[in-house]
Length: 354
Image 1 (cartoon, one colour):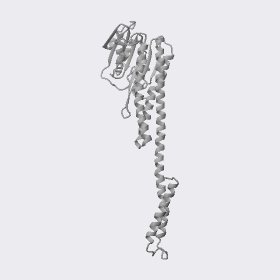
Image 2 (tube, helix red, strand yellow):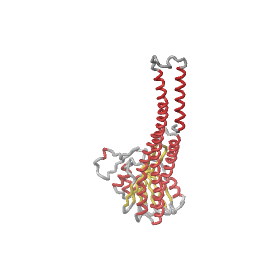
Image 3 (cartoon, rainbow, N blue to C red):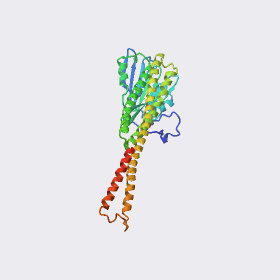
Image 4 (cartoon, helix red, strand yellow):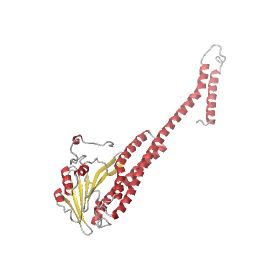
């Protein structure tokens, strides 16, 4: 898990706004899909950057351009220039390690965030850098890989299901954000199930490997907080700042979205506190185990102190010791040690020392 902010050394000192891809190439060739729709019309086609440059922005039909793959910086720059996207925003789109953020402009709104898929603790979390740009009649969606996350949204538009085909690009991007946040719910549910299992295991029978698992979960939560926490500010700004690009009816949905992301953040905080408590329980249990071992060893040592004394006295072999020539002396000393040992055990038991 990366806690630092990676930066390519070759990019140090280049002018701000330079279109340079930063990240891992996840697709062979960039794929561009163009969807044009309104209440009565729907058209979907795979196209090239040349086709995108011919798009009529003034046409009232909504144009949704989905770009899979960011490694061809020149192609991304050409797409963005078609819709008047600023160079600094293009730089953020191409930086796959950029933190989630939102920017409002006169002609468009820009949002960058992370789609996160949590497989398991061993596999870790898979992240997808997602950038959204929407203006009056257009929406641009930029993804790193070839995964088609928004097929259900596309189906709703094509089938004229719900409000999405009737409303503007603000509602379209709300639907995308809603999908991302719903995916966060699935993520924290999987993570929560694993944390619950670990908690049960630590309470019932703490083992050495549990300590490593606690630290792995803590690292995973730090990463998730880094990726998800900023979403709270993004949604808050969306639902609180007035923009002519967002219809009044959409603010109601954005407020509901804000409630969801607050709940998710609160859940992540509770997981972090749970792991802290689990660590305390583990340390306490290990301390209790050590105390039990030390108590047993102390009882054994205490019992053998008088036994050692008796053996030492009768092991001196002085000539005038009365019991030295006694026929039953050996059996007497063993019996005496047995009585003393059993008596001490009985006494410790009465005191409830074990």
